Amino acid sequence: MLQIYNTLTRQKEIFKPINPGKISMYVCGITVYDYCHIGHARVLVAFDVITKFLRSQNWDVSYVRNITDIDDKIIKRANENGEEFDALTKRFIDYMHEDEARLGISRPDIEPRATAYIDQIVDMNKTLIDKGFAYAATNGDVYYRVTRFADYGKLTNKNVDELLVGARIEVDEVKEDPRDFVLWKAAKTGEPAWKSPWGNGRPGWHIECSAMSKNCCGETFDIHGGGPDLPFPHHENEIAQSEAANGCKYVNYWMHAGAVRVDGEKMSKSLGNFFTIRDVLEKYHPEVVRFLLISSHYRSPINYAEDNLIEARSGLERFYGGLRDYADVAPLPLSEMQSSAYYLAFVEAMNDDFNTRVALAGMFDLVRELNNAKSNPELARNLAGQLKALGLILGVLQEGPEVFLQAGGSDQIAAETVEQLIAERIQAKQDKQYARADEIRKELLAAGVVLEDSRDGTTQWRREST
RNA sequence: GGCGCGAUAGCAAAGCGGUUAUGCGUCGGAUUGCAAAUCCGUUGAGCCCGGUUCGACUCCGGGUCGCGCCUCCA
Image (cartoon, rainbow, N blue to C red; front, side, top):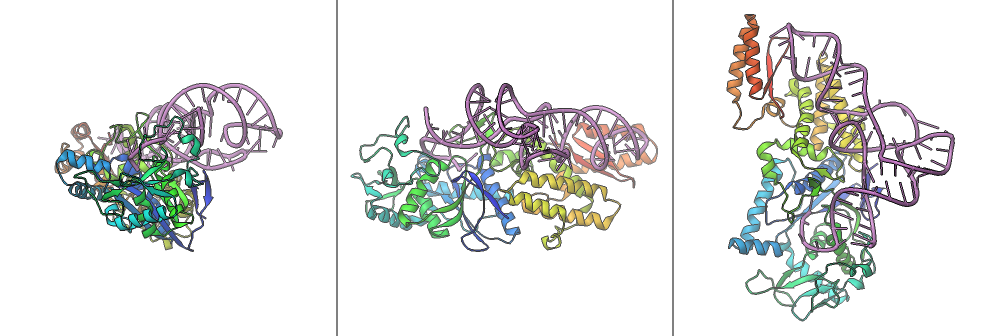
């Protein structure tokens, strides 16, 4: 039984799909004017894991994640660079796809872009004007009349009257009310613009998601997700737009990921304290980044720090250590795991609002049994297959164990050199030249390589996590 | 000021009104030529003050501290 924490009701609820067995999910994606940072990675990974798990449980998931490829920041950045806005967005969309691929994030089923939905956005604005929820201002802007929507503020528990108090809302002569927000922005000279009944312009900051979700998911859909800073105003405004225009409930379950912090502060572009995905992947294996992100619950804040990445790597080393002798074992089909206590515990944890941490705890129990089962190859291979199957759902443990454990940067000692020294050491050991053998091991340790002798006289090696 | 979230052992991080979370680390043992890995064991917790209860880390109330949103940000 699937339970999901709903931001709207601020509690965990039993999930009831609109259509039996099906889930339509829309997640707010990236505004593409810069490289993706770890905060983006968290949302991307969270909903990737959620989708993978739901599909493993035979839910028919339609996963839509948009790209916002027109907005003020994009225009500003393109101007700074002296390039066309769509050249800028194309570049960063490509970078985003590269980052996703490296992190093992599956592409959404549909990845709509705002600029491809201008007609639908214009249509929705017309409807909102016709219904009296919006108005065209004298300068060609179109605004949403916030006070006309009775439910305004229901997602984030805002009182419309109090929005005026102390809030830094820009005073704008053309607005009827300072709380009104823009649906269509009249173009200034030289700005990218599309034709509309109100003159040339571009979409406002929230309407694109209302239009794209309606076209890709329908007027009412199951799950809407996004980052921690989106409930207000973005999602609140989406509700106002969509429910006013469509005349029906917009979304059943709202899901929001927790923030990634640096030194206790939220990581964000505006604070400038962000680490890009590609920066981090310079130094850490992609699965380490994924593991860090799934080591805590998707709604909890997590702290981005070097120590936490090292710890994430240690955890993965434990799994890969257990999988070492089973590089050839494929993930066991879930159909063969239906009675496995490990699988059942995993599913129970994930069905409980996607509790990846508890799911991982069960996998640590599994690897312990695997380590204990080395004398029973049949059992061990089964357990290894189970471990890989569960890892597959979370998007980890899919690397060759040796590849993972021996992965290193170009600044580190070469694998061939390590192998040579190991061969020399094995000879020394056979000759009972233990002093020489220990000397070699010490030398390698200084280079960040740990040797592990096994009973049959062979030696395995891995790189240190620090 | 408004709305919301959190405070767990050395660190990270979950569930739970009474029964081992888990990982990393520490310490002891097994194993090893010595190590490493692994296994077994050990260590160790619930911000403060009240209340409910036979019993609270877990529920309720009040503090304190931290964080997020209220403005573009995942």
